[in-house]
Amino acid sequence: MLISIVVPLYNKEKYIQRALDSIAQQLWGEFEVLVVDDGSQDDGPAIVAAYPDHRFRLLTQSNQGVSVARNTGLSAARGELIAFLDADDEYYPEFLQTIVGLATRFPHAGAFGTAYAFEQEDGILVYPTFPAAPTEPEGGIFANFFLSPDICSSATAIRANILSTIGVGFRPGVQYGEDLEFWLHIVQHYPIAWSNTLGAVYHAADASDNCRDKKYVGDAPFAHLCTELSGDFFELLCSQRLRTFIPGTYLVGNRVLARHLLAQCRRTRTMRKHYHLWRMLTALPHWLGSFAYRLVFRDFQPFTFLSVYREDHHV
Image (cartoon, rainbow, N blue to C red; front, side, top):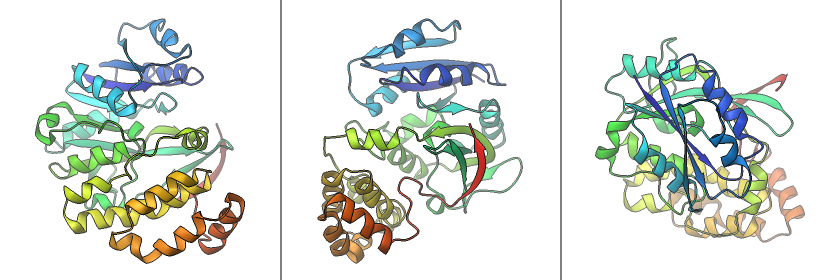
């Protein structure tokens, strides 16, 4: 079973070698790698081009964003399964083998995911928990995707033939949440199979810097789905994602974007409850607003949307 692995690449010279090596070390060796250079201005593409493995291919395009880069990879993929890996993340050696096992055991599933480790900026690994995930050792089907929507793109794969059914890829122009939007379209048509085997490491070291660097203010994540999905469907999504995403965006210093997202979502039932409080807090200077946020929402951790346990382990 051939697996195509799509790797969007943009200015990740520091990390791409680690990502490529993690693919080359997979226990399942029947794969092709499509690294899509999205107009990088560093030496990342050169590292890919020089990689000594014929299964690795470099595709190039002008800078159009991660969604277009992934869609370019989807169009060029030849595999029965298509997996995703961000250029600054890495696989555990068992990942592809686990995905193939899920695809074999659950032929009716359209997408697959595994557990993953989350490396914080201090190098400590935390392990997200997934309340609705199946617990069977061999994996199972998500009973309710919305109770555990925080799957990681770098620990996921899809069947290639579902793309014609869902009719969409990753939505171009979206800077946040484009991966979850894609999964939401899939879950309307297909079940998702899941394994608690650790499949990948998500490195969060530069997540805050990436958020600060985003100057363009586009649509609020998932807001357009309000017109495409049922009301309850959308409201549940809002309650689990946007209530943490908006203050998370603010706490890393992007107040303009936080206020824009808040305004776009104010008419949902979820947002109405806290809208005026959040609007007042985001109007404060960042240092004061950050203090007030942490005082009001004591348990809030930006960009760590899941319940996790800490382990004193450094990468």
